[in-house]
Amino acid sequence: MSDNDIPVSPSASPATSGSLATDSPFRSGRTSRDEAPQYVLPLVVHIEKTAPPARTDALRTAARAVLVMLSDERSADEGEWAQAMRDWQDARIRKVVRRARGAEWRKASALPGITVTGESAEVRVFPPVPLDGWPKELAKLQVSGTDLDDPEPLAAPDPAGPVLWLNPELDMSAGKAMAQAGHGAQLAWWELSETERKAWREAGFPLSVAVPEAGRWQELTVSGLPVVHDAGFTEIAPGKTLVVEGGDRYSPLPRLRRP
Image 1 (cartoon, rainbow, N blue to C red):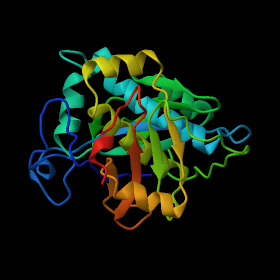
Image 2: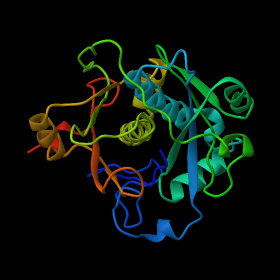
Image 3: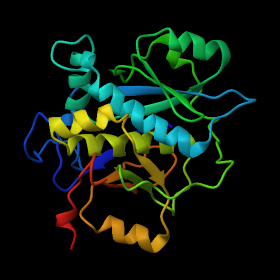
């Protein structure tokens, strides 16, 4: 679940910059961002042995948790998390998902952060921490052990919100896939104006996570839509892991760039 992935978008960039700069976190290859102190956004998923969440709901909830953190007033301007958020986004965009249950979950929930709930999943997101400076309550949580399933057939993705399409050729743990979904949601967020972000937030950040057929995946990867590339440090080889397709209302990603 440890995650050194590189989100890549053909045109998107953080709200603080108007173009894809040479040191953007969206660019592959070593940049000045690699020289900056590295931070990570911790996410903890609540997994009880007797009642684990459904896999796809955990992915959706993790993606929404990232959006909730990005949009929280404490993450902006002079808010208490704002400096940590800036430091995190000035370096590589890293996310790590760990699991907790019982007393571990209660201790993690007592730390500053935000708990986001889905249909069956609970994910708590915390302000970024230095790569080697995790709070002890989070550092001891397990990274492995997130083999989640979908007990019911999945509905078709809702086109009213962004669709996070996962590479059908990859076998990722749920935790790894949750980190990828978080990256995809962040790409969608960076594509939007402040007005669009507000509307999406007020709607509760609706989004879908799905796995396309192989042919559809190939179409998506060459469509000009934002793509997440994995750096290959954990679980899988370097390559494309996720494509973000925008909904017409909440995340109008650039459809006109498609060939």
